[in-house]
Length: 226
Image 1 (tube, rainbow, N blue to C red):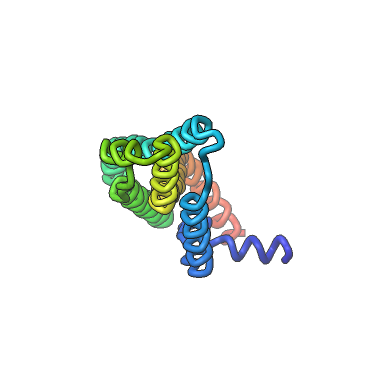
Image 2: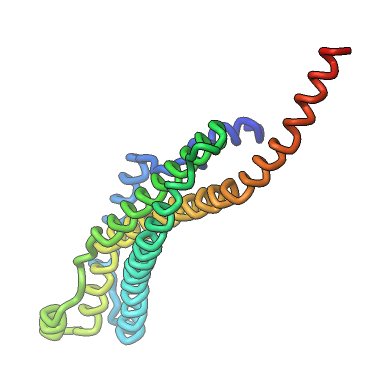
């Protein structure tokens, strides 16, 4: 595939990021997670149950940290969106006026609308990040049940691993949602910067047109009388 083909195919994703549904990947993930569960159930960890329990705790804590990190970023993004919306709204009155050229006004309104759409979509993905729940956690009951077994450390390690496997899909969904929120928020900031640049440059352009317009009229009149 050439660079030109890649560029045009990736343009919609560049302008408006989206998640493609991949049923084949979902099926493979189901098989993978099912295989991991079966492997954990049949695994013999009694050779070094202390090391197995320590490693299971490390993996369990790492997955919890991934989930908490996504939730923390979602809260930060929502705060940034809440702060940026009033700033954008304050610019709306300056986008179109009596002295504003039609082309410049239309361009400013389009960029403003695009920035607002990006912000709304970023907020939606951030809310979705917080909405995804990761409910498989260890509890005192797991410890009680584990210590009723012949090898309690091995049983607890297996329970921790099963909780991690059960949470994989939810944690991955959280990470995906926060990545999408990041993509839209980045585009919102870029379009917002573009809008500010247009507003800053527009007076210079209007002044240049006004300064050049009399000369243009004068040259036309001289040609008419020549």
